[in-house]
Amino acid sequence: MNIVAITACTAGIAHTYIVAEKLQKAAEELGHNCKVETQGSAGVENELTAEEIANADVVIYAHDIAIRGAERFKGKKVVDVPIGTAMKQPKSLISTIEKKLAAK
Image (cartoon, rainbow, N blue to C red):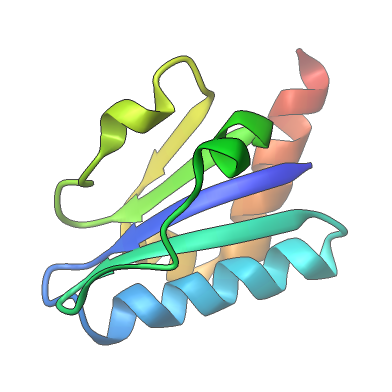
């Protein structure tokens, strides 16, 4: 599965980057490709390309603030969760997405 994600927390510092790392690691451990764009206090980093978005099977929004540029994901399957959910249970989140996509 190809996953793209955006992480953004209220302060835009620690949780944004911690969750990005946890999502990438969990996806890789489960055999998936994952690229994460962070929207933190330093602005947008690791920005997703149009090609990466087009090739994505699913988009994960892990955030506590509004996602900038959400229009880029129109027509994609989007999973929208609080940043705390992705931080505490990244593998469970990805496994649940995987099961739901397989069921369709």
